[in-house]
Length: 203
Image (cartoon, rainbow, N blue to C red; front, top):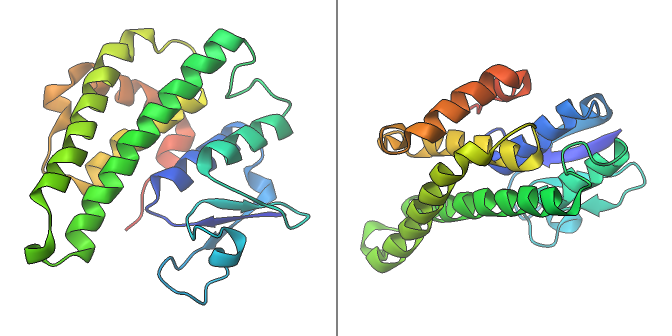
């Protein structure tokens, strides 16, 4: 069995689990919760960055981050499943994934700013900088919706995970009212991909 170091509220872990389910590989993976701020957790030996997800292969090799893990799983399943073989489509799908992962990175930093800094230590400039990244990403993704055909692919999975993470951590920010095409797309994705509902965030 492979081991996936994980967390029930990580959008990057969720992306990997959805991918594994779609590829028919999830039954070969054991989920192992990571204690991210515990220096004694073996995660720091498996991934020197101390970040999840990290996939431990049967031979003991550790694979990270989520984009590399999904690529590894896709190849295990024969290739060209969630990451297209066609060079143009591959580039488009991986670029979409990168955009969604970047939206998530900025969102996670905003959460950390609130959680780990006292109010007097928080930087309004930093918050504005990260929020601008989120806003630009949302605008670009709203414009891309008409192009999101076929799939699911890793780009679409990353998009669904990013949107649902915003719901989890920023419930007071109604992105659906501002980006209606993304809202419609996410509803359709959830209907078409049962693994999305099966992996709903657990707090």
